[in-house]
Length: 398
Image (tube, rainbow, N blue to C red; front, side):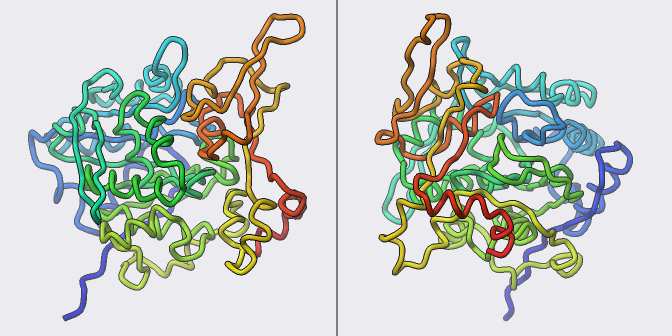
């Protein structure tokens, strides 16, 4: 008996105009039965947005507010209660940035206009959850509204990522962990493979019922916050977030299973990442885009195993702080899981200067991800990496 194909809906939508967006979302969801198959009257429906940092919608860092508004409206039309929540990354001297991110991103206004409840996970309490996977125990403190929800709708932004190469359905669920827990887990799982496995386990532990990916304005380059906006004009959706991630990665130019979170999730049977087992409305080639810039950090994985030891240090990347762009806010230092960022007073004593100690850095790129000024750059350690980085045209053929 043949395995049933996993359905991933994809539709083109060139902008966020309300009526067009709403009809496109409905059409995308109808490919696998529609929202009414998942949501019942009276349900608490949690919309887990991407609220990485306080950025305006045009910067393509967060889920677009108009998509949030449309999903809230569709939930309410089914007689259910939409709740919009997340925990932003990074801390300041005043604590969490989540409330400010809700405001700056436009998500708070969009949710209020649609009559939805807004929840800051950093202020909502948490519940301990554990998962046993292949003899390993994973412990999480998950935001209480996530546990209490009847239905979870995951709303990631289609973006590249310096550490995991791509952030989509699986990576977006990291935001269900409130406060400094995200930073602490980076310290506990410094290896990229280990951290990707952790993300996959968390995704399965609080598995969303539905994922709708915002790919109208995406991010290419060294995302998830310091890359460049790329207008893809796509809405993607599936009940299987792993399948959705693999489809999205294929569309923008990653090799099959190149993204470790997807590869780990597939190996652990948390979802389907075999394109041969995924059904799309049309051939995937119809959606592929040319010249989508993938993150520089992926070069290490492309080295053949017999060459790895010889050139690995040449192709390793490290974060560097641009003192001319730095706003001296200290978010990078507070977000570093291993205290690799040090400060010293400037010559005239009027501000702090931040520097990264390479020997202490675990290359998690939290500083790069969370810097509000794009003042943390990802740079190659060796001359070979720097040469490849200059040959931009070469990247399009890898």
